[in-house]
Image (cartoon, rainbow, N blue to C red):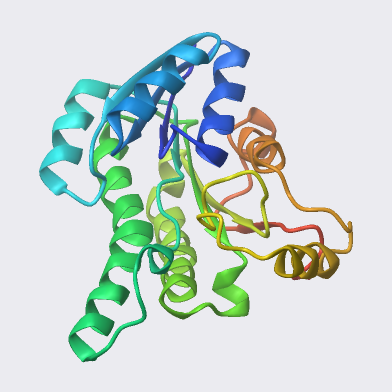
Length: 239
């Protein structure tokens, strides 16, 4: 039985990723800051799912969790999101600096800390998969910059762990509906414009992202590493 850790696993994409791995028969651990939501998600999923509440930006909490978790085969760094949706516009340089730091902490540092803590416990054939964003290519202030940093870090990570037989990839998501990401702040016109920008003319779903994550963690993806896989309905194309 494979052991899988999904950060930010209580809602949205993370929850769907965790649920799909659990349905496969994996032993799944979900982490997140909101203990009530995390525990409820673990109880509602079918299969072996355990919740470990933690703040992924806190090195001490991550180190403690790593000891609880033990050996794992798949790490899915899903925690993050655009923290600008939770703040007012910065009024001065101090607030601007704090806003940028929060997005870097939430999106880059959570992945770096959790990966670094768990890598010694991952055997040959394991996979690290980090959820990125189309914002890294299209630009979106501090959030886009943080996700671009995630993609660059992933390349270096893949180089470091490749000879251990461990892969590292980013799933770069486009517009995904039915998540908490936009905090219900999108207008209908904006939603329509995001859907229209996709060649498929539909929004992405958490299941779309989860399916790609599962493939990258599968035996069929052992020679895919250091990549950012775009799952955006063709809104932003690669060669």
